[in-house]
Length: 114
Image 1: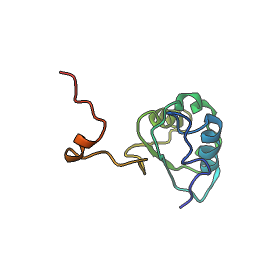
Image 2: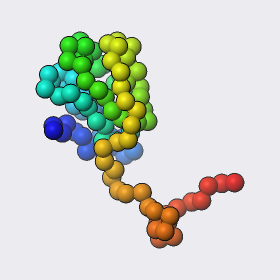
Image 3: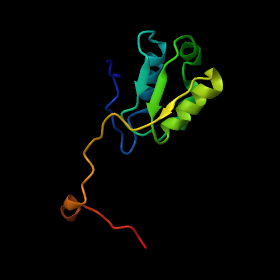
Image 4: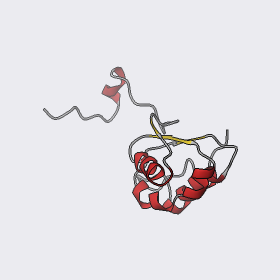
């Protein structure tokens, strides 16, 4: 397993600087040994880097991109340019576990508006 250099970066609500995220994804796309890329977070801002993916490398070394939320934008770009399928699935890690129903009384929680 290889972890991207910027996999755990944060920048406010973003998963780091777009250029760094793009570099990590493109490094993985160019690596013939890597068979899948699993997003560690959602993909807020993914639309900004989608058209800059290394499409020639992705076509030459096909691999799955697994993620959720706006990572779907990257999957759609890979489908559009390379006809590579992707997987809309759970992220590989979470910064902190979601509170259980029992724990919500001690965590900041707003009930749904009805």
